[in-house]
Image (tube, rainbow, N blue to C red; front, side):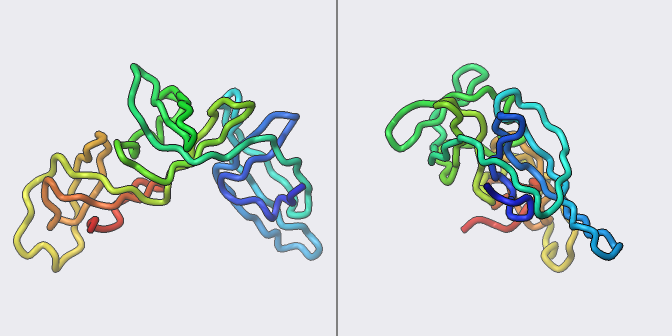
Length: 188
């Protein structure tokens, strides 16, 4: 049984006998003497998809949920469902609206996806920290633009729009942070 202070993003715990994934953590240290550090978690119920906030003291114990982590690879889009395949070639589907925030980073050949299976059913996915995507539309590069830090919007091959430096051109590949959706660097 982990303590609240030991949990990290994407940890899976049982609350009211249902599995929940930790999406975000906010730590509050009260200024009063002897007051316990509080951990505010944004949790997602892996069965219903409902998101909510819960606060625990750092030394509160939480039950571990019965969830299995498996490495997945994106296969194809079937209507509104994204199909993933695990290492044993078993297919797992997930509706696009269940992973709306993450769908903007999923392309063919993406590696490093981890799936959370509850009772053999795919309930959530975790993407790698960064992905490489291609710019399909942006304004022309400006000569000498590398000397300043101005940005311009660029549409990626998934439809996601990200701000990139002015010297980046259409057709280039860039690395994007999947946590905040921001440009990181050119891809090599």
